[in-house]
Image 1 (cartoon, rainbow, N blue to C red):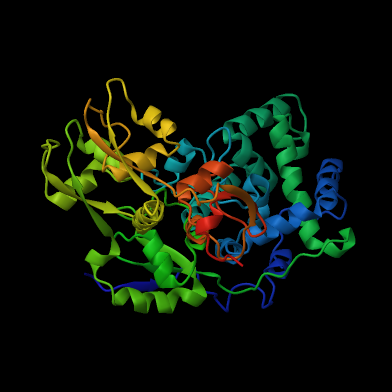
Image 2 (spheres, one colour):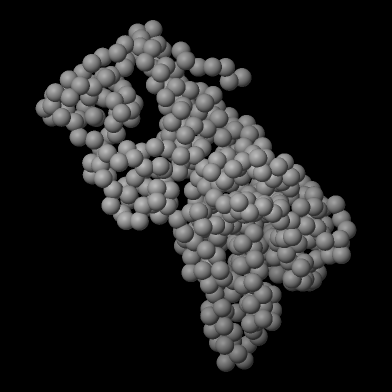
Length: 478
């Protein structure tokens, strides 16, 4: 295994660059370069009024920007670009790295798939560079510099970033032919673009003089928040979070480009971590062999299964299964055993399910003989048990076919067991779906189902969840 490299080169503070201040907001103010006008355009004033009237939104985007803002300011200064552009993700996405528009634009800079590919943002099953904060920042600034070279004006470059250079170019040509001015404010552009530049200028004005609008921007330290570590090979993200002593949600916030439970097999293998955690992570990683960076499960191939269905079942790819098992073709035989790379979270969830099953098995064991016409669903309904539990008790899955006379095991709780009780839980700092599920003896899948959450939902302190728990088997959650 090649030695690990702790790469601070893209994130270090350069003492020769930028004003020496303790607050990134002041550094941004000192680097304005788009508009120095003392009077605001009426459209900008209109947009400013909205932000002033919604201070809770301003507070929210300030906190969302906290991990990323210093790095973006560093990149802008390195390229000698106006620092107002560091505020553009507020307009684009509210600084939400998992933002996805109806037009399939993704990430804090809102790249659509085609434009992302043009500017080198890789997009595959494992990884989406449009959400990678570092890579998408490089791409966005490359694009904006190109547009500025095209139009020689930052307001026009910003308009083209929103509407496309063709749209802005045609509007300029139309005004030229009519003998009209060709500045941004004189062009006939789509309504969204007409509002887009004033929004950015309004945010810039708010950052420039927050006290004038009775607002307070919480300071953001003028020092690196993020550090990049090249881990050199594929690694389970849950394991990486443990090694870094952060939650998995924190890891995804800094590494939103990863679509799955691990870094992509072929890379990138760079992880972004809090700068304060980087050295300890590197030390912990050196004590871990490359083979131990992923967990493995033994899978017996069942009749009718294919590599495709097995890969889908275990959230991996056909190529990864073939590579792990040294298989050259897609042909597999029923009864064969395969090694499948699985996530730590999957393994932990399986363990939680097993614990829940053992608790349920403290009840009454029934032996059931399958009748003609029986299905997993009508049997589960008849005995008031969960279909997934029923299949797990019998080492089956819901798609398996039942046969008349087949013997099944059904566990029913003791009569003294309490009925499920709905409770409201307020998310705290450091909570994740996994820790909450363990705390209340339920499964992650159930928590997501009850609250309409997805695999990539990020939990926020103060957020409310509804849980359905059995008081008889609860542990303290005070």
